Length: 639
Ligand code: MIC
Ligand code: SF4
Image (cartoon, rainbow, N blue to C red; front, side, top):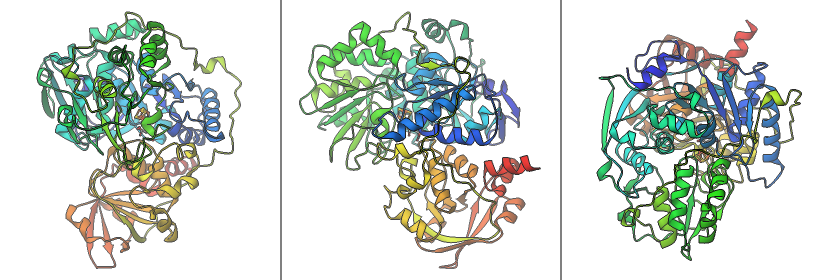
């Protein structure tokens, strides 16, 4: 068996391990973050479970840390109290980005983890099966339910040789993205092997596993070896180590090989993580902003490389450089080692340990700016400035770029080395344990609004095609997130005014005027984040189905969980038959779901009969018919 099969087999509770079949796996650990967490906990509360049934559940507060009004602080107070009440640990704001802190303090090889954040696979760098999911799936797992998913195909990614000077783990995953694209990983787990893996530290492996999310992959997995043991020992957690490797001659569904020796620094160009070219081809581009951090590149190792590059120099006059260390552990160690002083002296603006600019919480660049970031997503308008051009690069490329003012290939410079400590600074005093807080009362400020409820699937469904979108529509398009909107993650009515705003600012009004309808889309609809709001808001607007060429995994589950039909064109060219404003009609949707896998959509405006596919397991058919997961649970409870 390969590693993925071993991890799945040891957690399998239902189904057969055949690619494409639905399987259920036991979940050992869960994580939530605050921007998806409020909804997840409201849903968890509605299930009536007293204490979580996982081995470990952690609620992180790391996204909405810009408290420009009472809203974010209300969310924090709600999350902290509701989590402690139900047996969940709380990582307070300032403690760091969920994925970095989880890797440092809680990740354990051989275990399963789901998180209400698409970059949860970061802990795949530690030999975990770590999967991003919608908040409702995480709420269910906290209640002890298995995670149901399609048995993935496993892709062998063989890394050969060693990285050249100032070439980075980030360049490895950018190379994978260049080859496979943002939809190349859908339905797959990327499993890394080869002698090249041996030379990568756990944080480097985590960078690669993190950005596997941009491939659309279910997860990414690394072996657990002596390097893993060393990392755990340095975190004071050697007892958590178990070895994990693929069997000799293990089989895989597909494979690619990357020769690290010839890999050169790469950059993802605007506006997609797969628009990858060598940095050396971009050297004429003048840069206005450089942002270093995010769950992809904010480890102590990354930060010490950046500090070494900046030491004794000054940031270019036209560049604003921000640095957000990934965790308080990283920040404390940078301050003790003097590396922080090197950054500050060079002119870096040091931000708190949080997601920050990655999700547009501050530091939106100026109009038409070029912003170079070590982050994982450069989707259109995500930075908060629609006209900005964002490039994704390694920490080495970012640091040299900040000094030079133009996109700079770091391999032209002498090698800089990361510091790899024998012992990390361990201080978990910002992680609250429920056993220390036995009598908590849940705090609900005025920003906490109930989530919209779905209703039983109607027999006949009619409505207008409200919008016809292109390929690769992200959840950042469907439900934008930035400093102005993130404070309203618990307020679906407010958010509904901004649905699909970057694609068409009139969409929301049109949807409201028509009492809902259909969304028509191209391939990979809903790529990117796990935010359930990209389904909850359309539900609130009365969207009955999304008819697309294909869907991203997490968003498809979120639609089903919320009773919205994810329909796939049987013939992709049929998409061109539907024009915005066409009247669409589905006769006897429940009957069609019960009897098969196809749904006929009639375009009443032009008479076209379009066949759409909706492959659902018997379990999901029930969910769809009931009108969503919570409705299905309620119906079962009534019985
Ligand atoms: C993101 O990077 O897009 C986010 C913000 O972390 C999201 C979660 C969210 O929208 O709250 C994700 O990746 O799932
Ligand atoms: Fe936070 Fe950005 Fe990572 Fe999302 S991708 S978890 S916003 S740092």
